[in-house]
Image (cartoon, rainbow, N blue to C red; front, side):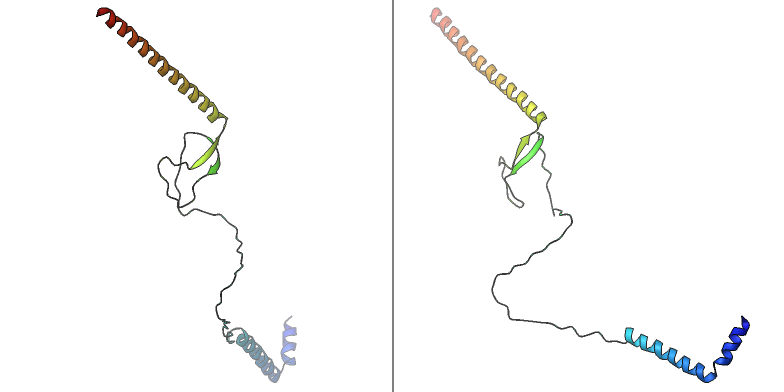
Length: 147
């Protein structure tokens, strides 16, 4: 293999080597000038007079929407929120209806038990009032008999 390089050296005279070196340097310089030496084009602006009119534009995006601030609201029932009566930023007062919840089966059962307890308590109050009236009437009869 050594004889190939020796033969190649003989083929290339010193004049040929100089020409090749100049061509290589010129090529490297040209590519360097094209990539580094080029000036960037000047920025161009287009302006116009502002006028009133209808602006139609749309924006599309994808991703998650996160609230800037939030308040945790808890309830004593479980179910699905079917209606919300307030909006973000609204001022609410005590007792104001915020949302409507459709009760699930567990909550409906609890509601039925609570309603039955309420009716039972109303009946107990009615019985106590009847007993009070009866006792007042008996007392009045005793007092009338004494006088």
